[in-house]
Image (tube, rainbow, N blue to C red; front, side):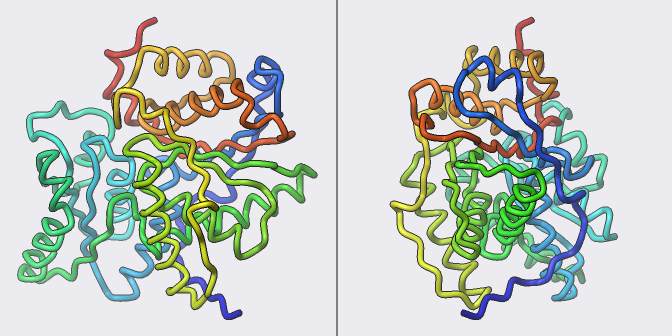
Length: 330
């Protein structure tokens, strides 16, 4: 079978290390829990988004584009990473953010401005119904201004962006050999679907034996199944592969959205503080905190009772925490 992944630009600090969460594993008295530190892919572009952007931005450069346009929440890690990459490469960027222009300049939004991104604020309703149309309109405007724009969807979660986590699974498989460990399961937060789609593509390509689970931090299981199936199909088309994926092969552990996307319960925040003090690892409240909280609940329910070793991928998000300090109780 022909399988040719697209070119990428090397930006992230890779491979990211894998650590054992010794005290958490002992506390739960279940599987050995490991964490992959994709929060350490860089500083300005820390987190999982840079793996996807390596492919998206390379495609933009191949098309001689010089202006990156993307979208996300007002504290979007992806938008901050996009702004950082644009600045690094001498490009311009425009971020379409769900939120108010009167929002406090803090966390990722502060860094967006530091990095020189143009900010366009839109309402939650506009974001839900017409964010792509808005980005296309901005692209048309920038073209008239003499730029050559490139639109990156939310989270770089499309066919080309997913190759970032296709590569990540190959990286994990190599690290298993180096450290003489086999992961029975890999667990990640799911916020737009591209990371999980890429991992599933890698699983197909190398016949990876471990199960891959996503814990959604917004929407619901059916929504993300649809997203992942679409992204997976796009990636296969780009790579010239004829892999198939069914809903039954997508493992999403639903039920941990809590109060909603980017909204935290006191229990989630308490859990984030507890893990910080137990392992010296900082999770964010939007993605990794919710996902790790749900993961621990699933261990306690017996979902992973047959697993010996499980890898949780830390997809970053620390900067966003600085906009949430008032909600944490010490």
